[in-house]
Image (cartoon, rainbow, N blue to C red; front, top):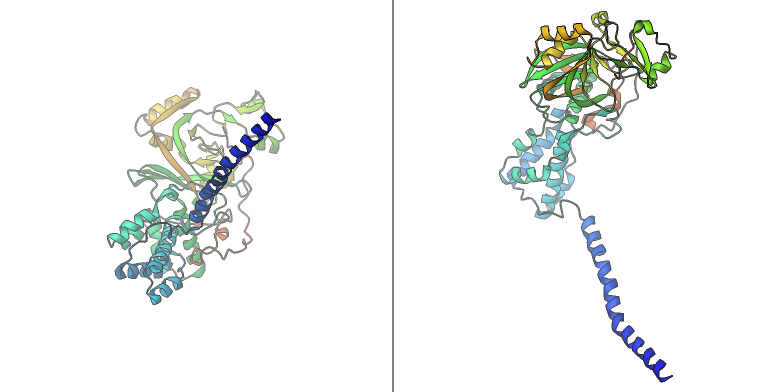
Length: 420
């Protein structure tokens, strides 16, 4: 019994020793949570050193806010800044000015539209990774706020032309169209690079740019209203001459599986494919440009369709006029047109890689500048404009889509292609 009492006494002594340690552990466990909650609830501008705004930089900020409508952007509310200035509260002035500057910077660089207004636009904007606050600190410190905001606008000559047209356009509907297309340019990377391909589905046109200059323009056929061409970006890695066409499942269903062998169709591995040849739906060339939409730029045997003004006939892919000439230009003198024609004559599928991958942007602009800089307006064939609303009102006043006039009927058999 004495031994048992001794054991119990030792247990109680040890419990008394560990009790404060356990209590301290519970407190220490809560400390990180308390501190994390505190810092997470701080406004980003309060969690960092205040930016030293001077009267001169504040004046420039207010000037840029006032001129936002020149870029079809909304004027930001400056009440909080003015109240802080009236109180003589320097810290609050800094916080309010910084918040306004960053909001305006984001509008110039990334646009004002939300995800719903950008629906169907799948071109990633690398500008989202720009540290705007770090740039702002330098700009305010160096009294270079004008360079800061001007440097955030799209660098394309197209944007500059739209902006000039917007400044002089009197018709409200056309001003709205210009504003929406200026907004679309803000959805793109600020610079597309020196070498790239730009397809404007609304204009039925493709452009090749080399060393920052337009090197050529080609007519294109795009998707029907029921199968619109998506807006996305990819990289062209090569040119495929004499391509096979893998018939997409949607077209197999549409045609009820009727694909005669006399037209070059073969069935293998659960797929229906069409052999290379003059009647192949992809024509004589297809660009190798991997993308999640299985949408490609390719030739077509139905070349008479390029004579039409409205060219929305495909299942979503982009058919390009003078496809072999376009492909030869992409190969950048690595292969002559004679060599390309000789390969096509063999009817053998041949892939010619590009020396350097070429970015391609499949976009949608219902207003764009021509080679002389004058702005042209194009039909909103996919009814995408109204979705954007009015950027100068923050994009909030979206309008109900208007009833559209029917597009010209596609000639029989002209809606093939896509995939491959």
